[in-house]
Length: 187
Image 1 (tube, helix red, strand yellow):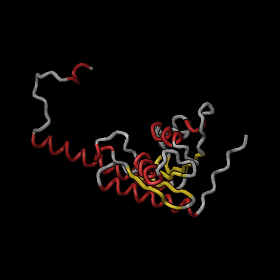
Image 2 (cartoon, helix red, strand yellow):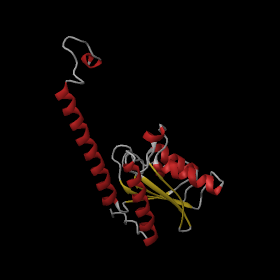
Image 3 (cartoon, rainbow, N blue to C red):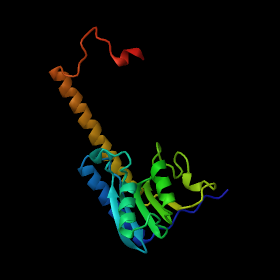
Image 4 (spheres, rainbow, N blue to C red):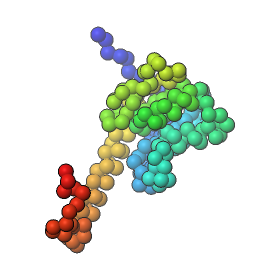
């Protein structure tokens, strides 16, 4: 059995992914998980987006969806068959289905997502022959840079949480008085 040949990425692909990584940095700066997306058509950047579910109180505000909404509004069409999406993390099911519904030609992602990725990590929605549209999917472009960004973000978050717990323990906050029942006692 032969190994599949890895995708060949162009300089334009690399440029678009660098822009997506910049968008991911924007997400981090506002306290969001650092995921960024860029939509191109014929090599031109049409729209960008970064994760915003926390700041917008919108569970659908993933980087892909934010960029998709911008592109659809700018192009005045919900179908974007000539467009390509570059995203720093493998799409989730919600984003994958939105991209297929919009008829994207191609999706390129950087890092795999072993928990919610649906371009092969958990399942591969893009490979489902029963669906009426098939978007080309390629992964691994600048994966190390994206994975490093995510690792640093979550390490920073864990450190901040540890520091908060330590401060609360020192001040006596967050402690449950002895003898009081909690939801946790039932497990």
